[in-house]
Structure formats: C-alpha cells, structure tokens
Length: 336
Image (cartoon, rainbow, N blue to C red; front, side, top):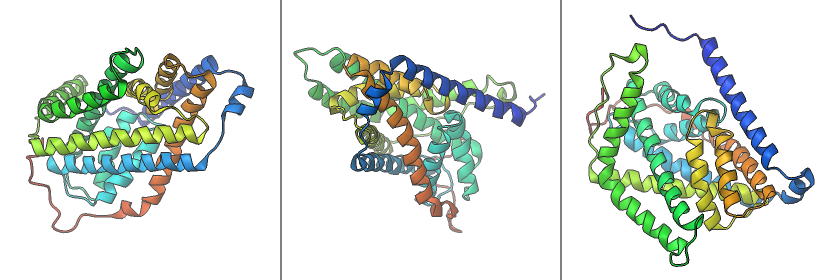
C-alpha cells in the first residue's frame, strides 16, 4: 500500500523551520565573529564597478551552467527546448533556493519548470541530469579543498601554491574525463537507493547509468571548470564591492570550504553553513574579523540580487516553446 502524500502544510512548516534555522545560524555566526559596529561601518565601502564585476561572474557562471544542463538533459533524451528556458529556469531557481530547500528546488522545481515550458519528458527523466550536476559540482570543490589544505592553509617553502593549483587542475581534468562514466553510475546508484528508502518508492527500479562518451565528458568537465571560475569572480566582486578586496590566492583557498559546507543542504542555500565555512577558512588565512563578516554578508546578499536581476532580465525567455519537430534527443537512451 502506497504512502499517502504529505500534507502541504507540513511541507510549508518544514521549509519555514529550515529557513529559520539558517537565519539563526547566520545570526549566531555574525554575533560570534563580529567586532564592534564601528569597525564594521569603517570596513564597508561600496564600489559599484566591483559589484558589476561580481554580476558579470554570476552571469557567466549561469550561462555555462545552463549550457551544461541543456547538454546533459538532451543527451539523456529530454525534449529539446530553447537555451533561454534553461537559463531563466536556472536563475530563478537559484533565487528560490535561497529561501527554500535547495535540493527540493533543484530536483523538483527545475524539472517542473521544464515541463511547464513545453518539455514532453517525464519528471523523473528531467531529474536525472540535475543529480549528475550536483555530483559534478561537489567533486571540484573537494579537489580544491585538498589543494588548499596542502598548500595555502599549510604552506610549505618547497611548493608554490600557484604551480600546485595548475597541476591540480590539469590532473583533475585529465582524470575527470575518463572517470565521469563510473562517477555517474555511482552517483545515480546512490540516489536511487536513497529514494527507495522512502516507503512509497521502495518498488522503483534503480536508474540505469547512461553512456558518457569521451567527447561529451570533455565538454561537461570543461563547462564545470568554467562555471567554477565564474563563481570565483562572483565572490570576489561581491566582497570587493563592499570594501573587502581579498588576494586571489586567499579567495581560492577559502572558497572551497565555504562551498562544501554550503552543499550540506540542511538550510536553504546553505545559509549559515556556507558562512561558517567562510569564517573558518578566512580566519586561518589571517583575515580580520570585520573583513570576514562583511564578506559573508556581501556574498549572501549579492547572490540574491544577482540571480534576481538575471531572472527578471531573462523573463521573456520563459514563454519559449519547442517547435513542432522538437522531439526527444536520440543521442542516448533516456533512463526510465
């Protein structure tokens, strides 16, 4: 007998509790780290050109992420949709994900948005590319975190951090392309088994792993690296726009811990958790308390502002519909 659907009121209450938890964590972290208000006021210095640079980084990261999402979706057999649908949906869900559980918004919201835009694919098929994206977006920050721990946070005189970073990126790309296929198989297998833990999903078959040829893997990995670069520009521009101009090496060393902490997913958008990662990493890198608090608040505020602007500017794309001959892609057999 299937499990009855959870009442909407319970879902709303759960979302409110998670948001309240994130706000409480953020406030407690600011209270714990923060110096006097006078020091914070003296540290804040708004610079519009750096805020625009951060917006450019957000825009670039969204462009390449939407391209990767479209590539994965259509390779796995989804209905072909205009690129603008993916871009607008991604920007909009990034805004909503700052207030609702990001995993729920990603897995259900993005698929439902594509269905509303005219996709003829089933919702389960549209969720598969998002699972792959989440897996890919976790691996690179973990690799960068390892680089930071070995070189930047614990520097050694015989290893130059920039040279080590270049070697790590080359090694990551060289290994990620051939290993993407088994990574996809493992990720989808874990996702399928987690879903079957729910009573109503116990009889669902495990999702089969799609074929990932080397040319496709190279494009997906390349877009992932470009996305990461755009996010770094977004972070730096947000901080510099409020008066905190971090050295590039400091930013690259601190961001991975913040990203990994934010991916835990307990609070909407990692609110309070991502900021805890920033605070821990930046304090180890010798940044003063006022700079840490300003950067934490700036990155959070500008994520909402930047993605909100992109959502509004891309609003006309939301009405795009597939043409009469836009059927599912035949590049791969869609997972059932």
